[in-house]
View 1 (spheres, rainbow, N blue to C red):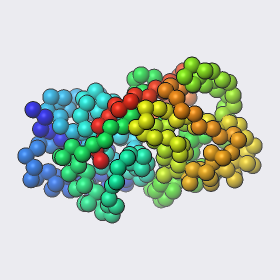
View 2: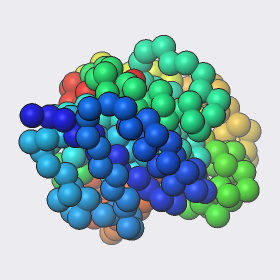
View 3: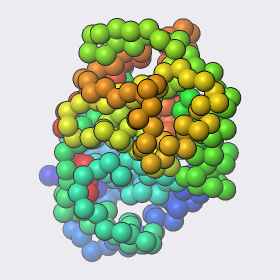
Length: 300
């Protein structure tokens, strides 16, 4: 019988907020008959150990406590178990939740946020969303990509403790002036093209990098990827372009296009750092994203 809720906690998320949430989780779970287990991750890429601590037969739901990174890392667990899956948002940006459908209340305190999502898990309040397979060995729920966003993310990480989600925007402005575009081959639903690209983002959701609306047309439950393609442009133009990304106005530029598709393959030279919902991983060519319709029962 499925009577166990698992909480996977990233203890470093939100400069300690995720750890602070654990006490509130324990308070919220005192009353219900449902049992629970709290599992703290010990390092990035701790999937094998953590998944081994979860009993597939008793799992009623899995809730990650942290930000977008932990939601990506354990999305494959949700897909394999087929149980409701969600996030108690304790990260610096929590971009994924802005693309999840449904009316959510404004939650101003840590205590209210934890109580709301625990209650949703207990009552199995969910909505079906798509997922994206990455080379058929990892999964993401929001956005995966390569290009300038990698350098933006790398430069933003040391700034997050001072500026929170705003660190991504500051880093983007800097890299608009310094980043060099890359030659890649992309194949979209079987149609191939070569080019020099500033950014490629395979999107299930619309927001990343501190609520920057990088792919406004993306819908997280429409059964399609939305590929954002940003082609080579003069560096001086980038300085004026990238402030448009936050509100999602960059789509009017001739170098920017959005393409709905089922799969995207990206080919490149050597090894490339790839952004999967804020997690940076190394991949050799090719890199392939495929949509998975209605793959996750997401807790709202």
